[in-house]
Amino acid sequence: MSTYGAMDSGIRNSIVCDLRSDTVTCPDDAMRSAMAAAEVGDDVYGEDPSIIALENRMAGFLGKDAAMFVSSGTQSNLCAIMAHCGRGDELIVGDTYHIYADEAAGASVLAGVSMHAIPVDDCNAVSAEQVKGTVKDDDPHYARSRLLCLENTVGGKAISLEKMRAPAQAAWDAGLSVHLDGARFFNAITELKCTAKELADCADSISVCFSKGLGAPVGSILVGSHAIIARARRNRKILGGGLRQAGVLAAAATHALDHHLSLLPADHDRAAQLADALHDLDVGNVHSGTNMVFFTPNASQHNPLHAHMEAAGVRIGGQHPTIRMVMHRDIDDAGLEAAITAFRSFYA
Image (cartoon, rainbow, N blue to C red; front, side, top):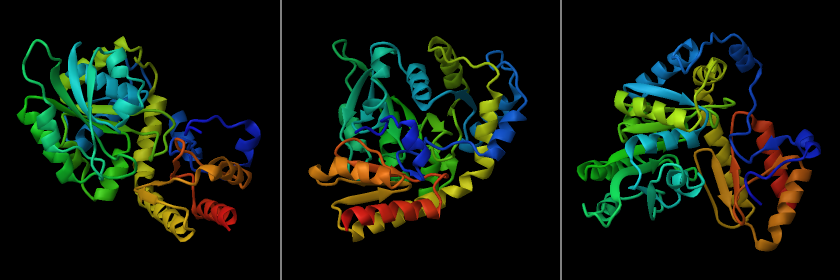
């Protein structure tokens, strides 16, 4: 069963705790009010004040020159890859990273960029030595090594600044650029207790998502130098991603920055509590980090467990055979307790 399995309307109405992903959050009344009150304009003409304000805010927050609001993290990553690479170039990426494993090979299909995947360590990081050993010689037989793609968090794990800086520096020393997929950038800086700029300094461009931990309905932002963002805007147009009066979406992201960023530590705490409860039930190998919890039940238990949890009003996700559960702003202490109670009744 996939994380993205559909939910029929009857189940949806009975769910009290949806742990499939932090993308399932819905705008509350305050966010809807902010969206309704947003001042808007045509963003393709550069005239949407809500988007301009958000872009300027995020560029400053991450210590870069400029930013571009887009509809999704996948589009943001692809716009960045196309800004750094030409057709026939190659990027280096961790073999579990979203750009390589979960974006439909868009870099190759749409940008003509090959991807050289390298193994990650137990922290889900790539090493400087791996990067150095993967960069290709300047030879007409080879694809040109142009870009290193990093990610943080990965599988719920926040990768330390040291483990981010080392491969980035190796890439820069070899003449490559560095892009950071920061889909859960805010979870990373919350866990690492670092500033946004400290993490952003590990890359030339950074993609940050608003529709995960922060709970906005739509939107990501690409941050980088003026030159990178100028190229990325052209790429966004090529990909059909030009936005018009999208200030309503920027307003949701801005509201989330103002009011939801401070809620992330509670998500992390609840994930740790759920992991502890599963450890106590001896369900097998449980691992967790930031707002995510993973474990792999016995093969014979997988489908019955999903059915049992849904009957109890708890939705769980993951890619078979692994169960993944993600905490987010729509899950409070009562929702957490409902999940723990449902697991206890299954494993009783």
